[in-house]
Image (cartoon, rainbow, N blue to C red; front, side):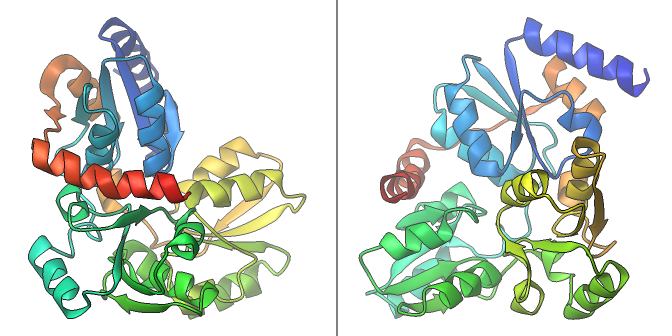
Length: 303
């Protein structure tokens, strides 16, 4: 089978077997093209909850599939490649978080959506990169434990200086690869380009950016902007997708090394195999389902 033939087979099978396919925007182009919904992790979870299909296939990483299950408990949720994980989501375990909470009992625990379902059971409220500022501003407490991404946490802290923060020193290793030198080199090579960056990058990278926001926020900004050139400070698949979507504009990666191997591990043959019954179904205990859903519900209440 070539790519086109495999895509066609997947489109036939998903209709036949009542599957909704979700693809995170960091996935390769051939996977994005066969998805029903494309976007950031939480947005995909919300789309899955609205979809009429009884089966959901996540082309992304494990925590994303878990979040889909939390929002769609009555649906069958599958992860297209079982080894697709997220290093940031796995950096902090429940025991360590409980110890942090003991040290700061008067703090509200804010969890980035990039956390495991088990870790969310110990948190008060969830945030996404798009909603973090709004949610943290609305929390009725000026003392915050922010986990696990210190870079997103420091971005929030810089914009909400009236609150105090305790951080866990975790983060996205892919975004952490980008440096101030990369910014200087890209700016010098493309002086007319706007610089769009994800808040998972270090403060040295985000400071001075023309736009800081979520992945879909970056994409929407670039599509709507009248500018013709952009430096993209997030996973390099976004450069590819934007170039397809906006052929009249030019997009440049901030760093050739900003590639998430966990996202790239999922292939089109994985999707086909899953539709043929070989995928991993995501299951969570009733206790985890109830407790983890609580911090997501609180995010929705605040935001």
